[in-house]
Image 1 (cartoon, rainbow, N blue to C red):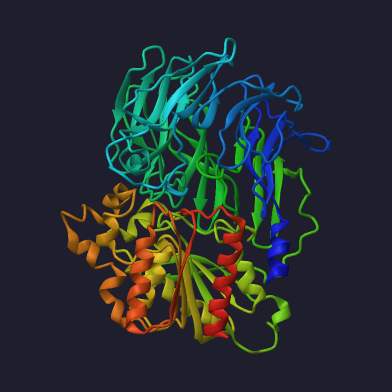
Image 2: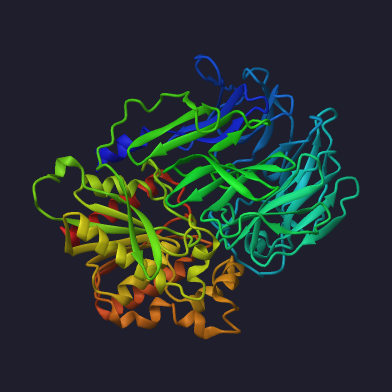
Length: 635
């Protein structure tokens, strides 16, 4: 195991891919899977000159993020901090990586910088005097009198010429995303009253006059909205609307409306895909990045008749906005830049015409996939066609010997999410477990059941008021399909997941005894008590239809704790101490019940961690504990 973690830890990771508007220069943030330092690199998209490290006059550990190019393509702006949790400042550098200059002296959380069209100003999201980072991060300790103190994220605008910084948006609104109008006079934004972590699910689309700071709501959605963007002529707005369970992991239909908020049109209704990002190319043409099946596609949408033409489609997951962006486009749409990886191909950076890009980096050329070769698999259940991924045991485990192997079902979080083909080196997002299990002689099944992205809004909404119902039946049908196709021992099945996948693991072992080992990460044992414990309860209303106080029965029927006496499966329970999304109390409740009932179980609470594990030693220990648990009960 140590050899594998060391190998995966050497993987060079690329993020925050940023392409200059003229398509000539590309920048990204580079790190390794085993370290927290992140540094910016720049190179030309043409030619073969190597990438240059952007040097900042700072010392010690450094974390760069949120790269953005000026409209004239001559200057790159980026946030940098001396460490993951330290104060970040905004820097600008020349296109060749020289001339680094710090242009802010901030005190508080800042993110998502964007240049004005005239290149004279940079806007960014700012919480003066307070920290943030979203509900994935560890929640701060809450002691003393718990009052109504709310630190809203506002739009700040920096005048590059004189260094003047002013906060533009109203103090009583939390801004999630925004875009400059073509004349640099107005922002369009998704916004809601604070607290920000909780209220993204009720955000509306607003226009904010930059000169006065006046905000006007122009669209109240029925579901969630993300990525508001102006058309090039300033006459229209576009955005994504759909059922989304996490801020930053977008998916849904593309809608347009006039700049005044009228004539709202769904441009992708019924399309068997989930739009996650888009770029206005002309008033009548938009380029889409969308999830399709268990992968992604780039398509061009003609607004005159709402027809779409697919330019590229692949098994990778790509998106330009939100959490961990890895795709960018030039202003004219003729050049794209992307970080691509698959289960058996390590990540590298590519650029060129969309779908015709060439590889620009080669840092992971020496890495070998010691795990099995992944395959896409499909099965049908209750009228749905379900896609999933199967990673078999590595060859060294005698896959051709005729013997049968154990299998672990890894259920993704969300539920509005999906599993795409991705090099399994991410320790923080639990992807490394795929490689670890394969090299230890396991099949791994990664299903995308109803409720996932990739097959349109009807499919994504198919688990509303039915958590653990149809989606578990889809997963179990996938187990049957995998057993039918591969040499899998039906008496040595395991199940695991994180977040919603953690809930599904807890739920699965209360509904079936097919699994002989389980690892529930950051799960939910009791939806009724969970409603009052988490810091993001607004996400539950669209999925359950009402609050727990108005309809407790719909929450109870999907709660694992209700059926806890059915459990016979040995279950390892894992959670972060300060998880704001799935509080540790939920894991404790499930573990406590199993322990009381005499079911083999163990609870591990990781000190200081939130929903996303940050500390490398915790990431590795979680991996080792998980594999050891399955080895104990499935080998």
